[in-house]
Length: 114
Length: 114
Picture 1 (cartoon, rainbow over the protein chains, first blue to last red):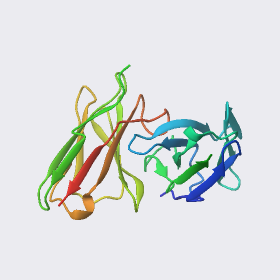
Picture 2: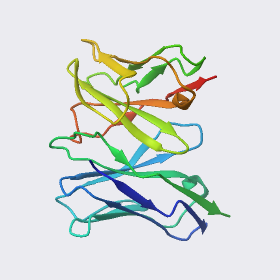
Picture 3: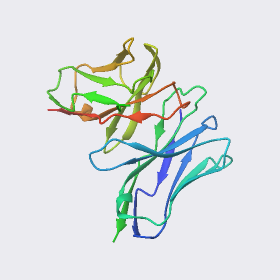
Picture 4: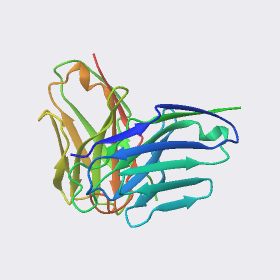
């Protein structure tokens, strides 16, 4: 089955700086890669996703890049704000079969320092 | 549209008991997936239901089971509870199965096994 590795487990950045979270996956059949944000005590919420037919996707301060050859995808947050503090999860799945559902990374605790 | 709802939100059980959790998907969504979230293992896929059929299942023992009704509502059952079953159980709904569409998460049911 799919295996997703996520780094770092904790990331502390100064407010206004950029944050980058990286994930690698093992199954070359995976073609859908969502990112979820989970605030303390709340449900995971999708913030951005990318499919394998594109290499990059942006939504305001958030961007995701995908390198299918290297089986690597990353989340980039620019101009970080206090409300960006949360745990971020990357995930991967094969939308064709989806045998394992979404396989998640272990999460990155992003801390925005004022 | 109303979001994904889960009941109950909190549950305390003792070892050996069984428990049933409920998930109501977003109106029009026919796929419901269940995940277990723990501090140690993160988010792990349990199973997915689509059109009242279990489409796939994660690596969990047979004590974990589920079903889906004709209105797409889903239940999951855990029999012979163990201490290690203490976790946040999240369900997620999407219009179609697998990674075809975005999965939207419910608030979760916090299960504590004593």
